[in-house]
Length: 382
Image 1 (spheres, rainbow, N blue to C red):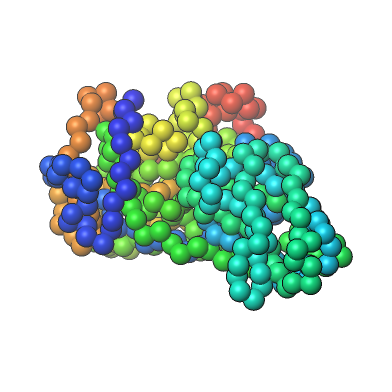
Image 2 (cartoon, rainbow, N blue to C red):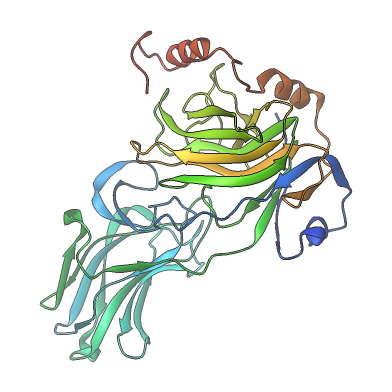
């Protein structure tokens, strides 16, 4: 298994300088390069969900987990006039690990000036907690309620609201859905990237939960041949073994294409720190303990593009955050990576687990997933 080394924030504005940011300059790898990947469209931070951050079934509530913990943004109520003395609400979620970041909060805001009148930070709790504001000093003032998630991180980075009682002017129970007039807006996109170092290095956008779009296809231009393609991520929230949550498609210059499933138990695992102990799982540890990588072995032809798509019939998106190419090609689509040594064990794993057309035998993979998860053999899979 590769060792978790460091995750370093760097600026993408100067790709040539990326390997020396914040540390001594490192030698550049002659074989491994990062593929430039376009930022995905905003996938909706705010949603009515029935699962909390620990994946427990709960009553529906307004949650910033709509696109995963990396999602950020604000959702705003319609303006209303303060008519009572108390505003009561229920709140859950986290303001960073251990709290105190002051970025995840609910606020009462003056509708005209934008002045924050009251603010309550996430309580550091997965279950909803009752909270209240004394709003008597602002009776008669036009206000709105804003809920902010400002933390893009792997964990302790979400916020939820169950209900708001500002009667008689405003009363909301999110178990009944999102009321009309509530508007969500993403915060400005963080354009930084992170260098994830391990046996295989990756360069990923710091605030992107996944490159796989909610609908349609994300097409990543290439224009070069590669010996191996490494995909960082390899997880899906609340994944069900055998379920296909998306597809990676390699399109060659001649027009032919190869498609590989993002299947839970094979190229995806659930969002845990350690992968499932299944022989069918083709995932290796990376420099990020919460993400893994899998390897594709393309044909020895020029790759025109790589297409990522999700399964429209599944709620949860498969996580792909970066692509590293083993290639000696020169292309404006490729960015340098540091020359990190790989252990003999990891190098052997890469060659034995590289996925190509016809390898491994998917019937054997499916049978092994069923055995590992004690599922009936021969039942229909998705």
